[in-house]
Image 1 (spheres, rainbow, N blue to C red):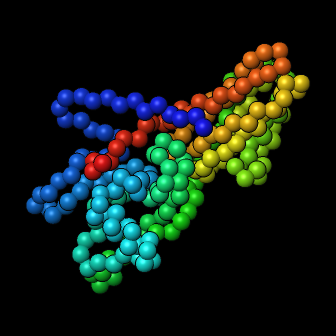
Image 2 (cartoon, rainbow, N blue to C red):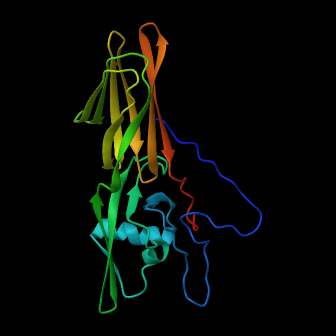
Length: 224
C-alpha cells in the first residue's frame, strides 16, 4: 500500500495545530485534558486513565460514573469515531462510534462498531493512458467488484468512482496484450484526491501508481 509522507514543522513560540486546541492542563476549571477534534481518535494514543474508561466500556458493555467522563474531555465535538488498530496514516483498523448518555447525574460511555462514511464519493483521477483499451476494476479486498470501467481512447482521462466509505480497496488494471496489475490503496477521512497513473515499463509491461493527496495532514492530539 502506498504510504503518505508526514511533513512536520516546528516553530518557536505559540502555535496552533489543526485539529487540536493545546496540551494537558490542570487549572481551576478542573479539566485534566484539552480536547482534540480529529475525526477519529486512535485508541493507542489515549491517556492511560481515558483508555481505562474505554477498556471498561468494551469489556463490560459500558463504562458508568457519577463523576465526569474523561472521554468527554479528550473528545471534542469534531470527534466521530474511535479507531483501534492500524497506524493513523492508513484506514486499517476497526472503527467505533462513541455514545455518551447522562441520567440523574450518572454518565455512561459505550461504543458500537461501524464503517465510517464520508460526505462524498472518492474517485481515481486517471492521469496517463499509454495504451488502449484499458480496463479498470475497483474491488473490496474480498474480491467484491464495486466499479468496472473501460478506457477506449488515449485522450480519455476519466474519474473512476471508488466509494464513500473509509477502507482498503484493490484496483485491477488490464491493458490489452500487456497483462494485468493489481494495486492496493486506502481511503480515509483526509483523502481528497487519488491521482492514478498507468506507466509503460517496456514493450509489453506496465506499472500503476496511486498518489493520495489529502486535504490536510492530521496533527497530533495535545495529550499525545
